[in-house]
Length: 132
Image (cartoon, rainbow, N blue to C red; front, side):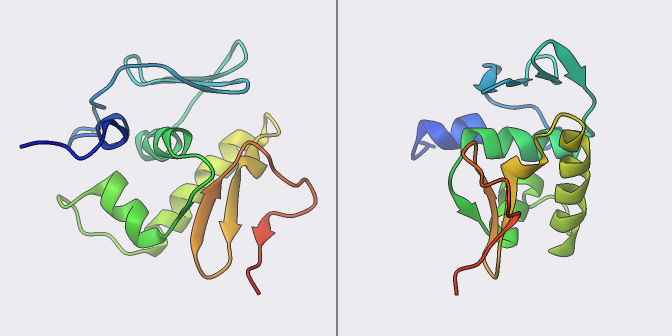
């Protein structure tokens, strides 16, 4: 079996949440280490639940792209579990709540009728992007 791109290898965890690459991902002050399952903002370690860690890892390896709920379910949860699309919303809300303590909750943006966008270049005045 041949993979289409290196990008898929970096982002998709296996059933147990182990990432194919243990390479540390860094965006600004945010550091994510799949090898140790740790996240840090600067020198401060933050606690993330397993699914929030996987979501953040996916977002950090795929920044500035809009991802639909369906796509996130496929990439993060995979085929081994059946959950509803709104499950994504719950985990996004938890991720934002954790990042809010560090002023980084605006990194995860809602794109109306499309999905979610992780962007380092955010507009402080808006958390929702309208395409109308």
